[in-house]
Length: 323
Ligand code: AMP
Ligand code: MN
Ligand code: MN
Image 1 (cartoon, rainbow, N blue to C red):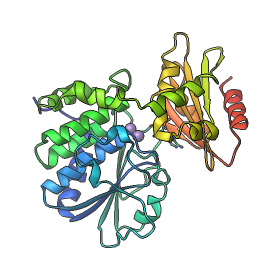
Image 2 (cartoon, protein in one colour):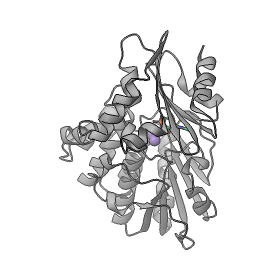
Image 3 (cartoon, protein in one colour):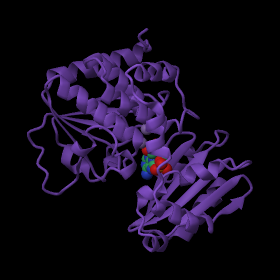
Image 4 (cartoon, rainbow, N blue to C red):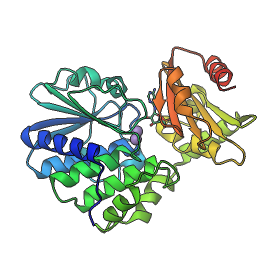
């Protein structure tokens, strides 16, 4: 049985699909520090557009984290370079980004394309683009892309693998943010003979030794403050174990897995500032918190970035605001 969308969403899917059919060349992109939802969505749509004979490229600011390299066509994804030439493309499709700024360096590349499509499920979306479909009730952008892909062509196994990855990742293994459609969409994806256990293992059960070593250092900084649990990763720690941002995958989720903890916060020192990742069991709205500092996300998962600030200063600011 086909999953039936609510009328407003159905209209958006129809409009966007018409544009995708009528134009010929597309750049697909997503946010900085690309994640499972964004990558899965990009590739599934890339395959759909290829299937209907379009010229299409995926370009992101950051490299694909190793854990997602098992995805079909992951090698087709390009990473930002100053000399990339995209002037002859007609449409930019921005997925899983609350604002165009979230695409990082890609913004400069695509902002002058003749037409921009914005598809996103974050709570706050600046409604940029010539057409935007934003709805925070969807579990993931992948769930939205599922309906677009389905409208364009029959969904194949490779697309199902990507879309399953998106939904699995953004719901934290079906723990939160399930929509009215999620389970029906998943049922349809599983019917394409994907191997759900294998996908989950690739993403969640193949932690590298670098990641484990980094976690050991991070655990030493663990702090409890009533229902808040926080942890820090400094540049020095990254350096000591030769780890990168992608090796912090799952750390903040660990904080929220502790009994009695309502909010988990991870502070990460980067070259040009401090990245804050927040997770909540749902009683405290972390998106609201992130928004105060120019970030965003969802009620249960949000983030923000402090440019050129010290990690202790950022920790102080966030903890003060949370109390
Ligand atoms: P993260 O902590 O990076 O895993 O992000 C959690 C959620 O917050 C994701 O939905 C991100 O897209 C969103 N998010 C993280 N950082 C920012 C930011 N600086 N601005 C807007 N949204 C963000
Ligand atoms: Mn995302
Ligand atoms: Mn998402």
